[in-house]
Length: 115
Length: 113
Image 1 (tube, rainbow over the protein chains, first blue to last red):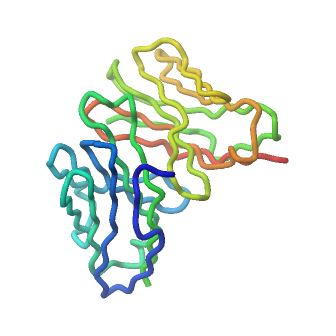
Image 2: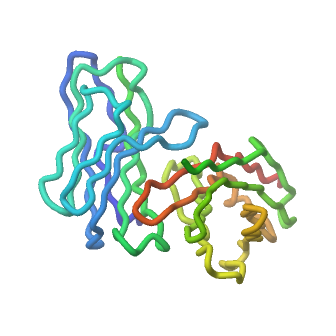
C-alpha cells in the first residue's frame, strides 16, 4: 500500500467544471509536491509546499491552484481546464531539509481526462 | 542546472537474465543523491534504489544493484534474474539538497518470457 494517498484515481471533467485532487500523507514529511506526467514522459514539477512555503513552477497556468490545509494534505484545485491538461497527476512527499537521501515517496496518481 | 540522460528509450531482456540500464548526469556539485524509480502500468512511482554521492560503495537492493562512477557521472542500474514483474518504465533521478528532483527521460523495460 502506498503511504501517499491520492483521490480520486480517475477523473473526467468538462472544460467549464471545477474539481479538486486530494493528496494526503501521514509520514510526518515536511515537503509535498504536485507533478504532471504525460504519457511516456518523465514527471514535471508543478508545485512544492515545503516548511509552510509554496513554490510554483512559473510555467504552470493559473487554472491550477494548490492548497495546503495542513502539513499532511495538499490539494490541487482545477478550473477551466483545457484538453491538453489531460495527464496523470502525481503527488509526492519528502522528509525535508537534510533528508535528501531518502528521496521522494509518490502516490499512485490521478488520471485526469478533460473533455 | 542539473541534467539527467537516459540514452536507452527501450530495453528488453529474457526472463531470468541480467539487464543493465544506463544513466548519466551533469552537475558541478560534489554532494548529491541519485535514485532509480520504477513506474509499472499501475502508475505509482516506486523507489528501487538510492545512492549517496559521498559513498563510494555501490548500493544494492536484492536483485537490483548500481554501478556508480562519480568521476564519469554515470549511474547504471543492473537487474539480475529478471522477472515478469520487473516490466516497467525506469527513471533515473538526481537530487541536490534543497533542490527539486530531476528525472531522466526514462527507459521502458520489457521482460520476454
